[in-house]
Length: 67
Ligand code: FES
Image 1 (cartoon, rainbow, N blue to C red):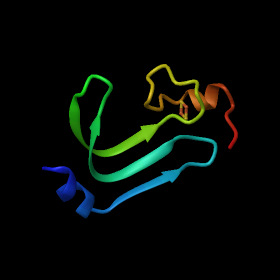
Image 2: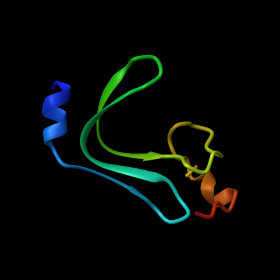
Image 3: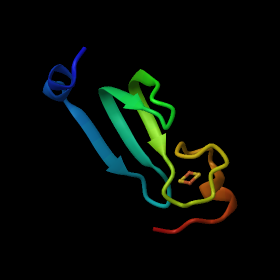
Image 4: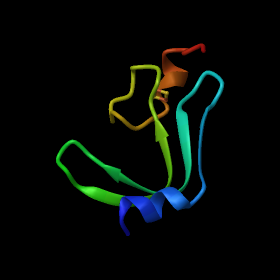
């Protein structure tokens, strides 16, 4: 799948209150090593406390993140 095909599919991005950014849909994710992985859902940290950056690991609850 190339980038143009990927953009034709509906992808939703939204912020959970006091939590991560959620990406829902068919999309690809390229990590810092250049690995490209097909995804259907991803939670990205926006509190800064995750131990699995850039992914949310639930640490927003531990640090009582408020948005
Ligand atoms: S938003 Fe969940 S760990 Fe940061």
